[in-house]
Image 1: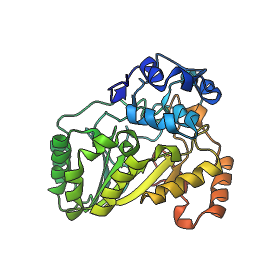
Image 2: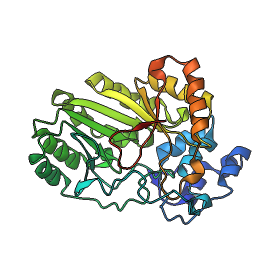
Image 3: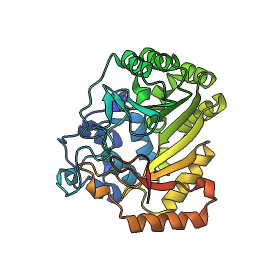
Image 4: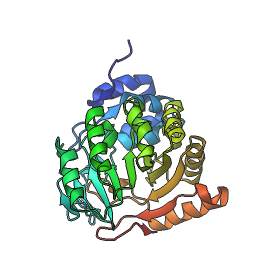
Length: 324
């Protein structure tokens, strides 16, 4: 009988759902070889993503994104708990400001999954039930802010009431003309993303609305992600994608080309290809800069310019992303 769960918090349950025959596959078995069943950064994977893994052309790549391994235990020079300088840029509880006249809201500690390369995997998250009021109070005294970015965690994991309260708190401030949402839910939990559709449909009448999805591999996109993106585009949202360049996941030109083309088919433009943020526990995903530049040069020969993402990294203390 098929499991009714919507998310797996135990690796054993997740592997049982994938089935013995699937995990015995040679390519998959190699990914499971260094499994850490008691990771410091807890395991979480949605059933939807597990289903994507089952039908993926490259299941090992998707498994690599989600399964903890003993490689995360390595202490590597230059890899730190706060690689992008979130903590020094904190302006108030849940509010980060790194860039001129823009503010980022850490809206929740909750995600649709726990990606093993997460740059905030060591961030001291706390869910803040009073985030809407605190954001409103801060914006009262910062009327130069024209763009607010909802991040987390994943802002679309907020309940409909809490998400609406936060959007309304921001909309009270006329200086804010652009609302940007960063989310992985269209590929992790499209059902949860769609619970906000009524509000998401309303927001383009009040803001210039941008949704930045996080998709790293073409096998993460399916008919359900297409439904989410299609409805948002129809309502007037600008849809962009940012990916992280990850060893063992997407560090080849064929995969990156397919990703850009499949995103475009779903109405989403490639935006950034990030070099890995140097968070503790993620060094095994790193692709060196020379290889990254070679890959971008290769896909530039295969794709029109609007489908070639910008290769960048974030450097703590800098006022913008840095081209690589």
